[in-house]
Length: 68
Image (cartoon, rainbow, N blue to C red; front, side, top):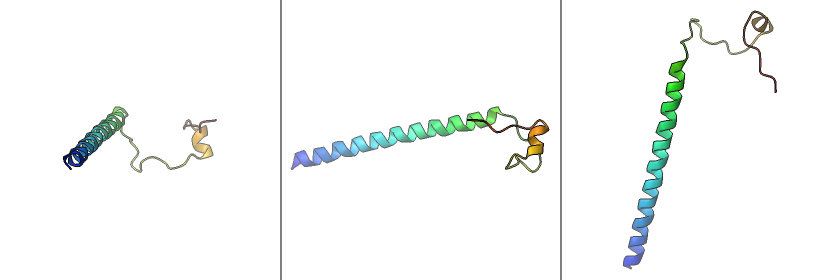
């Protein structure tokens, strides 16, 4: 039965290595997201970002919706 134990150990080590790799990748992704958010300027409006575009907002120099 030593072969069964060594196979379990190998599977356990492989799983731990995969999980560690996924954890590192996730951490790097979250760090990149944080860095990209820091690059932009802070919103100066006290109420934050408007949830929707109104027709008068787009005429007054606001952003226009992207066309496909």
